[in-house]
Image (cartoon, rainbow, N blue to C red; front, side, top):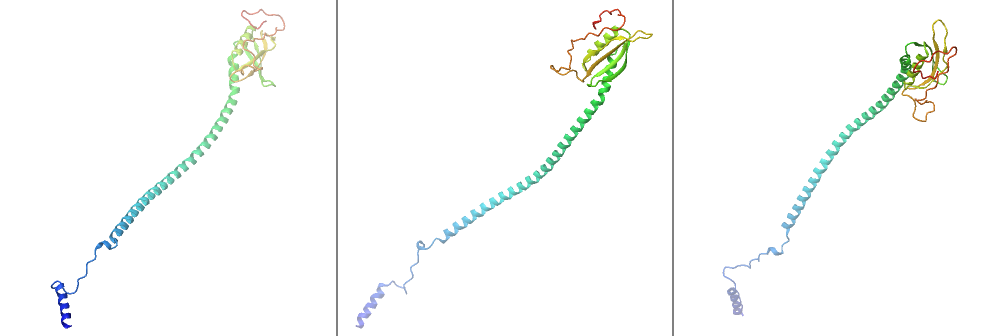
Length: 231
């Protein structure tokens, strides 16, 4: 029995390699190990991309905020300028109204002066005024004296030639009497700056109409050559 055991042990020794003690552990291949390095690299890459994206959007938002702030400041400047423009427009309207009032007042004040200038302008030599008054209807009535019928005719022609004298009407012509031979006359007309109104105005007399002056009282004087008053 002892021999068998020895033989079995001897056989076992022969089957083992020389110099080998206890059986060595078999190294473990990397194929079965989890890929921690790959996971870490992917995670790092994702974090890096997220940080870059967040930084980009942060910079863009900061630029937009700065731009909006600058535009708000600029808008406040324009808002102040718009208020100033509105104030200037109001002052302009007020100034225009005052200017119109001054212009109207000036025109009203200048009307008598212009009227007197025209009356002096149309008065021929040898004639003079004795009265200038305003009628109840707002027209002008002039009374005067002239040394001859021809002078009165010239006066009438001069009045008709002034556009501001609208609808002149010659009244009675008669001898004034006295040491110097003279004839009195009366004329009425409307005074309108710029002349008569457009066609259709009944108050404006046509320029071509020349009413005949009435025959003077007393002895009939010799009719002057070229007279057109129908005397």
